[in-house]
Amino acid sequence: MIQIPVHNISGEQVGSVDIDEAILGGEVRDVLLKQAYVRYHANRRLGIARTKNRADTAYSTRKLYKQKGTGNARRGSAGTNIMRHGGQAFAKRPKSWRQKMPTKMRRLANRNAILAKAVDSEIKLVEGLNFDKPSTSQFNSLLAALKINRTCLVALADTRSNEARSAKNLENVDTIQVDHLNVFDLLNHRYLLADKDAFEAFIAKVSAQAKANEEAA
Image (cartoon, rainbow, N blue to C red; front, side):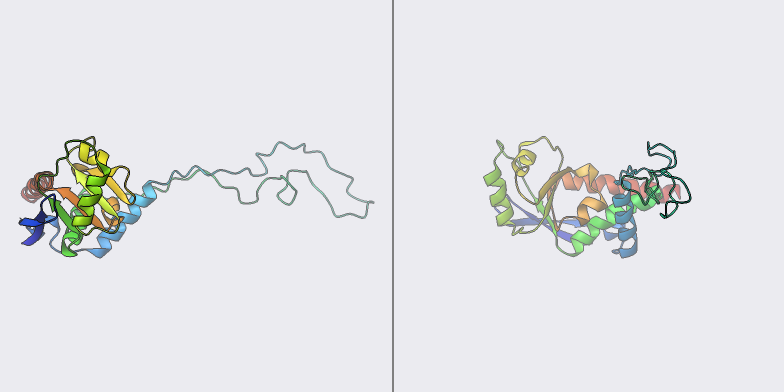
C-alpha cells in the first residue's frame, strides 16, 4: 500500500488515503510512460503542412529564351525550383503522425503516471474542496498552504465548478475532470491537486476495471 496525505483547505494534514500499487501497475514503468507520452504528443500533430512542387506552380511552360546562341546556360520553365517563386524540390505534403497503442497499455500508462506522482509525493489531496464563489486569491492561498510552487494540474469532478473557475486565471495551473486524467497532462505538470472524494471515486472505478480485466483474462 502507498499512502497519500490528505489536507484541509488550510493546508494542514488531516489524514491519508491508502492505494494498492498493484492497481496502478505495481511499479513505475519508465519505458511505458515515455511510449505513451510520445504517442499522445504525436497524435496532437495536425500534419497539414503543404508546399508547392513544380507541378503545383502556375507558371507558363514556354522556353524563356532559345537553347543556343545566347551564351547563357540552358534554361527551362520559370517554375523550376532554382527560380524565384518556383516550386520546391522536396515539397511538403500532408502526413499523419498518429501512433497506435493497445487499449490496455494506454490505460495502464495513465494509471502508472498516477503511481509515479504518488511515489514522488507530488499528489496533494484536499478534503472539502468547495468554494462558495469563484475566488482566484483563495485558490492561490490554497496553493501556497500546500507549498505548490511549480506547475499544477487540478483534478475535479466538475470543471465548471467554483473551484475550477478560481484556478482558471492562475499561471501554470490547469484544470481537468478527474475521469480524464491522462499520462500527457500528468507528466506535463509537477503536482497533482485533487479533491479527495473525486479522487477516491476515480481510484475505485480504476480498481473495478482492473479486476474485471483480470477476470476476463
